[in-house]
Length: 130
Image (cartoon, rainbow, N blue to C red; front, side):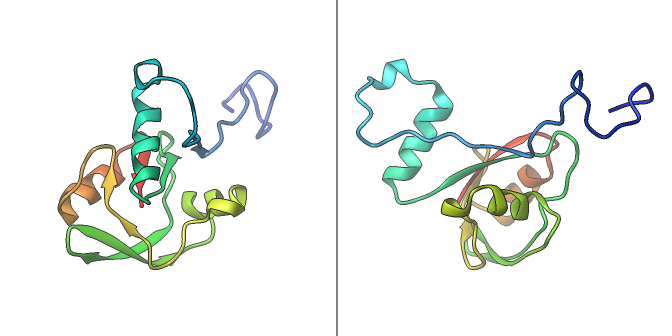
């Protein structure tokens, strides 16, 4: 989408989805040495009872969440329509993000509200551990 392409969606510049999802089954029989680092992170989170979602903020899109500090995490108290998290929930009904869940890590940042908030503001693909 640009000055030469007035339509919102064209074949030569398809719109990127606002999120990326990867999953690794617990019974995957490949050795850890064969898996990319990102997939190892998803597997480790799943084994710890956590969920990792990936949200694409490279275009500066808003997450659309409100939260409060809850120890070393951020507890979600609201999810707004039109944000990346609401888009995730519509696209992933079996893995929805819910009010009350805690953000414990974002792209390796953890341990404090300021570290998590700084990471959430980055215009990047965010690996958010809940």
